[in-house]
Amino acid sequence: MTIASPSVAAAARTVLETAEPAAKIKAARRAARAWRQGYLAHCFDTAMPAAPARPDRPELLSPGRMPRRGKAGSERGRIALLHALAHIEFTAIDLAFDLVGRFGALFPRSFVDDWISVGADEAIHFALLDRRLRALGSGYGALPAHAGLWEAADATSDDVVARLAVVPMALEARGLDVTPATVERFVAAGDVASARILQRIYHDEIRHVGFGTKWFAIACEANGFAPVAHWRSLILARFRGIVKAPFNGSARDSAGLTREFYADLA
Image (cartoon, rainbow, N blue to C red):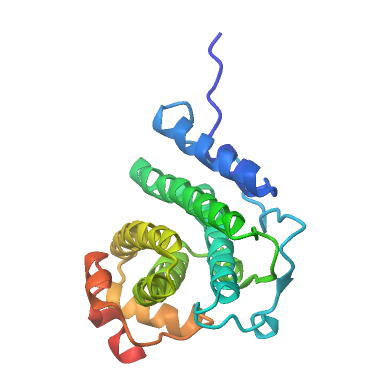
């Protein structure tokens, strides 16, 4: 008797339903490894939850209630910034696996290849940041965080093209703009260990934004949309933030997100 392989959608749901951070990291890396080794079926027989499970901490606040965290000049400011980044990476694990499980049936296997690798990367990023926070006497959950990143996923749960436009091509692309200056501030403060982590994350995120741009173009072609015009219309209609200068043009270009998309929306 042949035993059916578990589906990649079921593995994705397991990651989303895992709340405790260390367990979520393990679930994400286990799912990515199982997919690479051929142990998960390219099958989408399991629905994704409306929202991922969350640990008891950190306390989630609306963005307007978040305390100001400064410019990373003091150790307290650096801890606050590292904690905010850790929360982004923790949420990004769920974003990648939700993308796989919710929309993977619309695309070839290579879509899962790309986004499950992103989920594994985000798990590593979170682990590095949490370890650094602990070395500084803190840890993930010690400070409040905001839920804005998942709200963007919830607002685009009906449309993969909108999800790709908003999450990797707007929110993650903003990270490419601000990270180099953040690295410089950490180096200036003598915190080279944190700066190295941020530099690693920055290089990985260029690839992630590139996956977003690539699959957005593929989805637009399949639906008869002009990519630049459709991205701009989706940002105006579905993105709750703003497109802000200055832009890191070289990093965005490396990811295929050229100036014609965003320059005059700033």
